Amino acid sequence: MPHPKRRFSTTRTKKRRTHYKAEALTIAICSNCGTPVVYHRVCSECGFYRGKAAIEKSKEAL
Image (cartoon, rainbow, N blue to C red; front, side, top):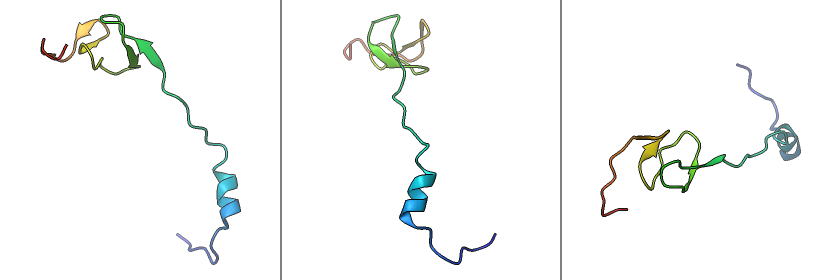
C-alpha cells in the first residue's frame, strides 16, 4: 500500500466526512410494561422481548 507524500489538509478530511449524519435511535414501547425501549433490545425494566420473558428480573428490582 503506498504511503502519501504529504499530509491531508484538515479541510480535505472534513469534506470527505461531511456525508455522515448521526441518526437517533428508534424507540418503541414495551408491550409488557409500556416503557420506551430501543428496537431489537430486551426491556431493561421488565426483561421482556417480543412478548416473551428473555431475562429473569427479581421482584425487588421492579
